[in-house]
Length: 355
Ligand code: DAH
Image 1 (cartoon, rainbow, N blue to C red):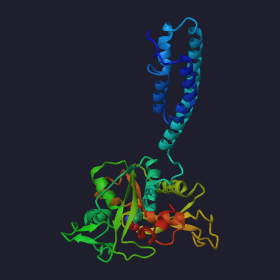
Image 2: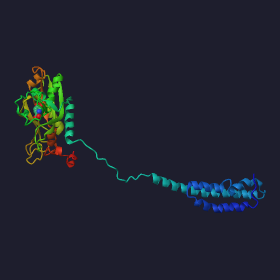
Image 3: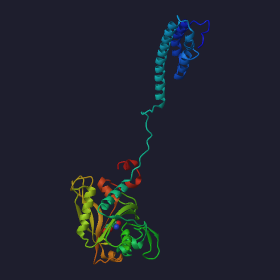
């Protein structure tokens, strides 16, 4: 217990404390500030604190009055403090939110998305159709021995496709050992059969090369997908049924196919396969896709020549097979009504973005 300083009138002090509290509290500009103001108003050394401590020493007559006044003072000061604390709290919260806020209206940084080229998309789609039938995907070298590109495929050394005007050579070597840039993926037929026994069900997507000048229908570097099936009792109807299935998967369930006799050294009989025009469904004079013919040329195919089977070490009296080869660029052109192979190599973004 302590006594008040002799010159201190408790009632007047408490009145002054209440009177000045509102101004001091209002002047606090942060919660931290407000805590300091609170301790100067109600703390141990404040007039309120001194009076509280001295209560025991007051005259009995003064005590209840000062006591009541003290409570009243503390209550009123606490009220202003509480109100100001709420105000400052709201201001500080607002400030914090503003600092931490994210401007969702800001333009995002966009990274351009790449996409597969239409040729690759077409290859993937075609290969998927055959994988769905149980075919395996096979691969072979692009720099190829003439043996696999030609001899093993029943293409004699005198065949014009072997001439330099058609095929690109890397090395002359001995006959059959010349190294060429493969002109078709049919070479993988011979490579596969050399090391696998029947049954064979493969598709071979890959890059091919020919000595052609770039124009709307020729590229010196292009793609092919070769197909080969060899097993017991494989018939021409299996070839036709398989390719009809492919055509309907790729061009739509209404598609029809037709075979036209043709010649390839490695198949006998050989044929070219056309698919009915998916755009006009059979020869509208002005059709932009088939130009009115009603059919789109799709691929070459045939029954594997017995010579090819024999060269691979298979017995053509026991087994037979069919093969086909198609150009995915041409297939994509047929499907999308693209008028020139040049589009595939020009890298014009306006073309590429359409697919
Ligand atoms: N290799 C042929 C070409 O490049 C395409 C081809 C035709 C492949 C008939 C075959 C086939 O397997 O049976 O034109």
